[in-house]
Image 1 (cartoon, one colour):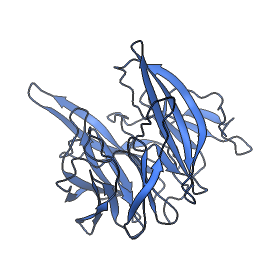
Image 2 (tube, helix red, strand yellow):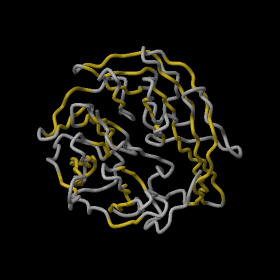
Image 3 (cartoon, helix red, strand yellow):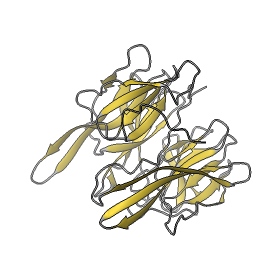
Image 4 (cartoon, rainbow, N blue to C red):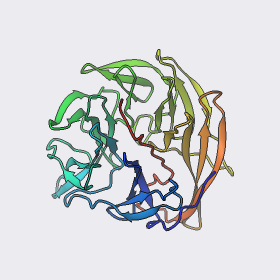
Length: 336
């Protein structure tokens, strides 16, 4: 059941982060700022208290959804810190900012990655601490810098490998139980382990032509299986031994096909998967969009309709991020 929250300070909420003290940080898509939600005395967030969150570091642009938890209880976000334009080139100097979740909460700039050519990144938290990341630019054009990076607490950034030739960008990075990192190329899976890529079996999902790889969300389930969803709502399941099988299809609604974005699915504490889907129709020069949600069961693969969260309209040239159907869940203790 959905509950309407009271006194929400912004209309456009992006990334949501559950902190170890039980508060929730929400990124405002309409401005470069964060909000903090604290539950009420009964533990409910519906009537919780909203307050201004930590201001971003002065040089950091919050236009990236790449936020990953760290073992220390902090979080790291990867995005722009500066842009340089000239007549014949466009270069982005990018680096991370770290958010302390202990005591006074502030964003801190980390050392800039001079070779980084992306304006956002796909990230994955590592059990030993730090993150692994692959930057990309676009649109247009969408193109990776060709390198896989690792950031460690206290050690900064280092290049740990190159991307396979078949993969122009990494739309998802999923840490597997064996310590490898899984990503989905245009046809096959790829796993990165011990500074090398291994090509796996075909996943059967549709590749997004705009980026050249599967661009939908990927969820590691409690039983070791992986649920992957392509941008058109097709689903596939991966067993722990690497075999893929069809996992169903998210439904059309009112004659409109589903569209699913990376980051728009999350594993719920009960083991089911919550999936956010966008349905859009253009009428009279405006795009009318509604964001529908489904729950997928890992037991029988059933898809349960859990309702429409919001309807809106916008001009076709509107620049705001189409991740409003996204959902994020960061466990209180992300690593054992």
